[in-house]
Length: 498
Image (cartoon, rainbow, N blue to C red; front, side, top):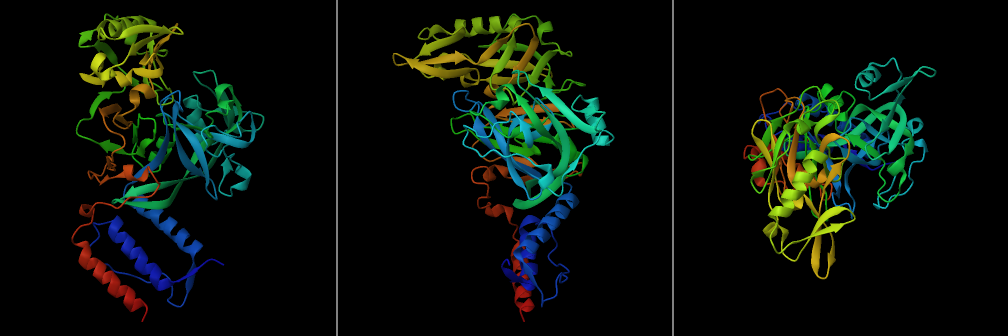
């Protein structure tokens, strides 16, 4: 038996919570007793009532900000990836998944998986999803409309012999996974009115991995799966948006220091310095129209056709890539320009075929600034930490190597975590644009939850990242009109005990 609470306390607590979460309530409320005063409720019943209530509030409000904790770092010598924790199934179980804007589908290792790692050098517990142990789970058949949507984007395949909707993915590093699709509940924290509402949930379709190959099988940096944030219909962001739970926009701010972490929200981070460039239409990835590269203010002599977008060419934003990659036609001029513009005190140094430099000075003082220039006159300014990685030291001098790599035989430019870190990035799928701004990602951010309502609400999800619980909210978030209302609540709670 769980602890029991008088039903009168339930009403008083719920009303008090509502004054903080929905500060636009009128000063006078009509209250109805939800449970007879003589009845008592178990804690589990109270939590279930709250969960249902929170779901109703989320839907009626036009959506809140779904916040995911972020762990990991871009540094390939430490972690080399950013990942988040989410909860799936009934009862909810934790799964740690890589944040990947270069793919669409969320998938996790399943109980029947072949080749899936069972331990991780990241010191996180690995789990295996078992559809049979979750009463809310169901398999997706080939006749399911959601499977058909995946067929259109090549995110699903169908096995005629068992009518089961499945998938097979191959990633750029040569690793791969295959499995089948299931539907179950995704549990998440939602921020609304400056407060956290836990136990919100929504049904989503995700992959159940039965086979993994390549680097996915290695335990040193193993996670439970990959969280695809692409813009196709099978992505979680598209699924939640189609249910009216979140806007078709998400944002991240990835910390670049050794401690890593950051912010990941389903919503639009609002910051005055964000600049936007349009997405290239009708592309499966987040393709941008890169038009030129400046080093120390000088335009590199690169044929513009190198940056043109086609089925196998273009510039992609991909949080699932650790470094950054340039085509051969752009890479050689880039390296030459960096080397020509470093301070005379810097010594060029080749390390295993990579262009590196030895210096005893701060790299901000001796290396040039780089500018990536996109359509619409928008530029992304890269300081030396955005294109260099420190490898080691030689005779007291730091060895810094260029983190941009050369792609052989392909005309693709990939901007990975090396470039994305220490910046706000907004993926406005509805508006078909991407925005960014340099930012200290250890600071809090404001997020707009507007969903075609003409209204915006600004919240502070960054305070959840460190310990999973909200810090004390600023007093300015509690309107003065709340004070007399709280007095009414206290009088009401006293009346209920009479």
